[in-house]
Length: 369
Image (tube, rainbow, N blue to C red; front, top):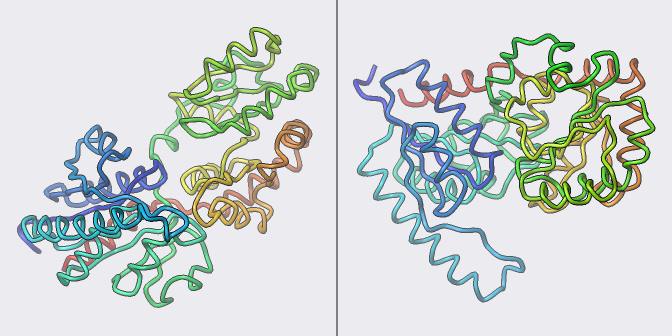
């Protein structure tokens, strides 16, 4: 066994890339406490704060995404930044001398893993979505191992390199100590009535928020209870609108939920975007859900993620363009249909893949020897 064990982990841009990356890092440390782990991210992106907060060192590259359409003159600068980033990454790797490099998708991973490939360092890719991202598709040819969360990824990657591991999720979600009635009561609600949890991501989701605001009377007249995370970006505006229109007693509004483990435990039904991390959490916890894929993501990958569940009767889907009219009526009807909830929850649970971070970490360690 090598006396020192060094790993590069690269990627980011969104929480959907960063949280799995941190989970993999923590799992590597749990198996090999002496491991030196260095993150490579993109300057000015979310990972430059989240990674140090989690106790890891990160170096930023001046890399950014290409603009659409590709012939946009600004892309000349983007291409030059990519070449500069790849040179910087190569220099970093020569100095750090890792035994293995891990890519989780996002701008930075294309430069860092590309540099690792050119230096003969074994690479492992982790693809969170059911529709592979551009960076991972490009890097797959030279990757040693590709860990995926969905079946059928042979469409994008060489079949012999693929390993179905699932997406690492926040371990804290699995450690809730409260019973369901206790979790509901802690939120200030009646444990006998169905509870719907609405989450649009940490920043919120405008369409989901407007769907709630347009159906306040329907909510107030219904038997359900709703916990609504608006996201910090929209919270003040929504508070003002509710002050003017009146907030039903069975609707609790918050900008951010700190104890997501307790919120999930309380929920009979979850309304969510269809990001890879959210879907992995819903499956692992066996939560019935209505997914509203964001239309503002590359390759419409959230719709592909959602359809992987819908095809197995493990979630319902409402298109973003139809959410204002359809979302809340469907949610209220579903939350009151106990057999439907049980079926959705059981099918979602069957798609959950536990221990993803540990399994991926073990593959990383194998590649280093």
